[in-house]
Length: 229
View (tube, rainbow, N blue to C red):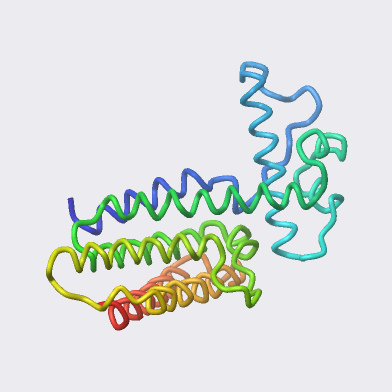
């Protein structure tokens, strides 16, 4: 399988995971729920809707309230509190879900590659595609805090570390397993993802948005090659 087709598969997989994270579908009106759906599935769907609304609200305003979340989700406060104790509880859930999706997307990308350089390209592609597909999640969990890499950034760092270990184990060479170099690549990845996630909708869609994503992706791969090869 070629690297191009492998990356394409990983992006399709990731997009299916994140279908509800970029926009929030309003809850069906009273009596409009699909009763053919198992109750557990309806509850999971409702929880996912609230998590997506939480990510959107907090990404737009760090001081957002429960009121803003329930308005976005189209549910009542009582419904919100059936799932979460308070806004911080919902924030934790939204952050954990975003971090899990990043890990899944990066792992899926890695599995479609053969060589370390292919893996760097696949990691960069999957990472930045996540930021474009789920900008609210990206803005939520990649806020600059001065506390080092985010949990998502550490997942990217781990992916590059694994690829570098594979490169050195193959006897091809490569940079020393320098933690600072790997962290620098992941930090660049975080900065680039924040850049893409912060774009207004008009700059995301169409050929212009695709060209910008490709340009940023090439820059991240270039950083990895310069520091790790």
